[in-house]
Image 1 (cartoon, rainbow, N blue to C red):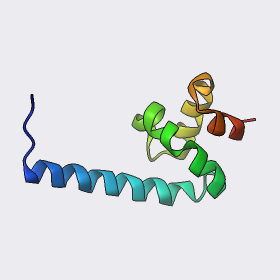
Image 2: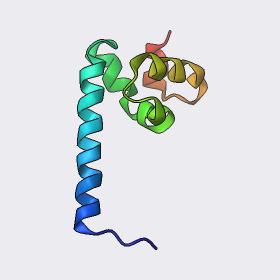
Image 3: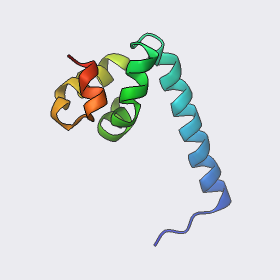
Length: 77
């Protein structure tokens, strides 16, 4: 079991907030708010290594279409 310190928790929280802000900024060029809302969880689950590169995220999501949630898959039709 790995012990977490307040500093490591703070670092992880900062990384999460930073990533979310980068995604939000990049997402402005990556579809409608509805599309982003439908696919955000899938992007984190399937394509986290591609974040924040929108073209790479899109390619990854397209490649993993069968694994997408129904709401997100509907955005790729």
